[in-house]
Length: 105
Image (cartoon, rainbow, N blue to C red; front, top):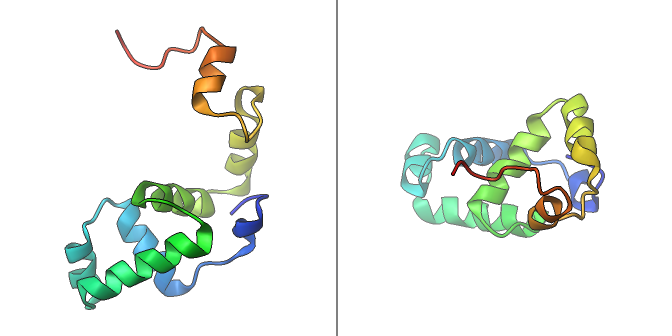
């Protein structure tokens, strides 16, 4: 996924399936139907993915999947975007560059 320690872990084929469906915005019951498994199994898989990659919610799973699937050139572009370090939080980035428009007024 990237230069971080948990990025060295490769998702299993089943984890990739789940991450793909989560990234599509599907609910657990729809994922269960699609994969022909129970909702409890879907929840268990999601919990395992969150623990394995140290994620906290479905949005982070979708982002992790998108970044994993992205070409390495995009990874470099995202890491170098705006000259901010990976540790810079969005609010700090806006404070550092007040010309960044966050939402239309």
